[in-house]
Length: 108
Image (cartoon, rainbow, N blue to C red; front, side, top):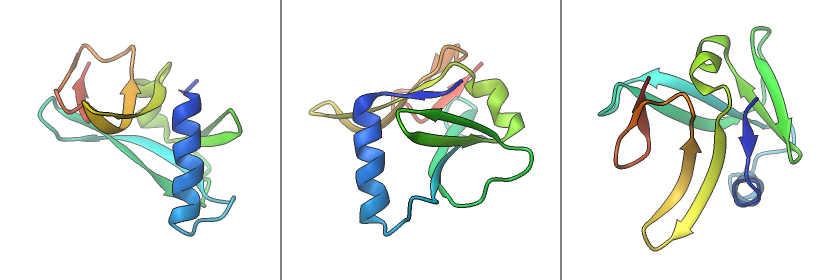
């Protein structure tokens, strides 16, 4: 499962409105090669649920994950920080053995 904190949920709902997306646009989380630690998180809106997607729902937010990315993301919590030390989405990933300082890339 992939979960979202209350702060992440609020920000995702606001972003959906700001970007003119509808309720049909779900959150897609995936993992791509790259970044300073080898793997990068990718987060965006997607209205299409593909046949191979795993669909999770937490706090009313539907999260779409492709099967390959799911291996890296199982148990991850999506959080949002707007503090002085950084602003943005953060992935709390129990599968990551190392993360970079920016929090956007990791390795397993």
